[in-house]
Image 1 (cartoon, rainbow, N blue to C red):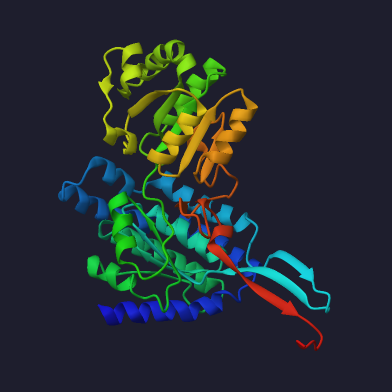
Image 2 (tube, helix red, strand yellow; image 1 turned 45 degrees about the horizontal axis):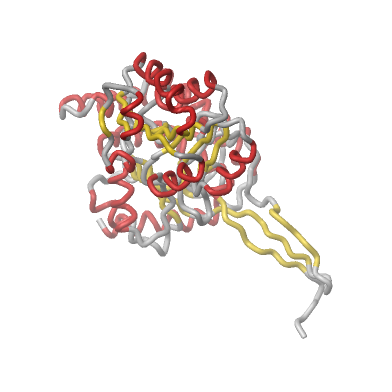
Length: 416
């Protein structure tokens, strides 16, 4: 196992230098050909995916897991569309971040370059294989993809199809590697390859991500969970506030940018809370309430201390009445996960205060937390979301998959 992993990682590092030399036109041509092959070979991909699904059904895995695992014609088309979209995005590699000329005539430039080799560790969704390959290839990073064993046939099928496109466009090296071996020992061995792998991005549940962080000798970009908040200030448009609350919780409750806690200013609690409960009742949202909230709306479950930390990923919401914006900000910074938090207010000063003082990757004003997404931000797509503070924060697109180097040019200058 160790030999297999080391050989793969070493080859990935060697290929990263070759990939860095490709032009934007060459990369875009490959991406468009990849999209063509995904459509042309969809029957083969679906056939292999059915084998994974059949095994999952035999093993009596959860329905939600099987849904994430399953591919269909629509999801295949979306994979192809994603590749074409990435091809149309601006290439960040070799772009100049800043430049200056020193008094001695030396030109100094800060230039974007690929990170190198990036390991993606993810679970059931085989479409992630295609998405990650597209984004990493466009940003000139070699991908090592360690998908879940339950999707191994699907992942290998997608890789085989995309490799055809690469060869047809004249690229004579492999810019991505799908790990064929399964088992935890493979992951552990990969996380020890800090000589060859430059970055790890885990995509999955909190337990998976924590295991990766604990064992990795390589830098990790991640977010553990999305404990997202809405703060309903005292100066609001009630109908807009209700719509935002419902959309943030109900539109897709199982994702990391769905709201999990709502904080309500005490001055509007008595009027707003009954209206909010009526809206949530329509969607059978379970409310877990602090003492003040429970006095205003009856028949709700009492929130515990654990509820303020919890990521439900379900039709459950915890609600608390606060004295004002200072208490709301303090609560968010204590209990939140630094992912996405939004204030609903007509008070410009409070909006500015919220943005400055809430310590989260994404701070919103008068919009749903569900907008915390690379596509919604205009990044075209995202490799994931980071709540770290170094290198990348929030939705990570192509620019976040690059680092930089300093380039200095002169005409014979020497340092005196």
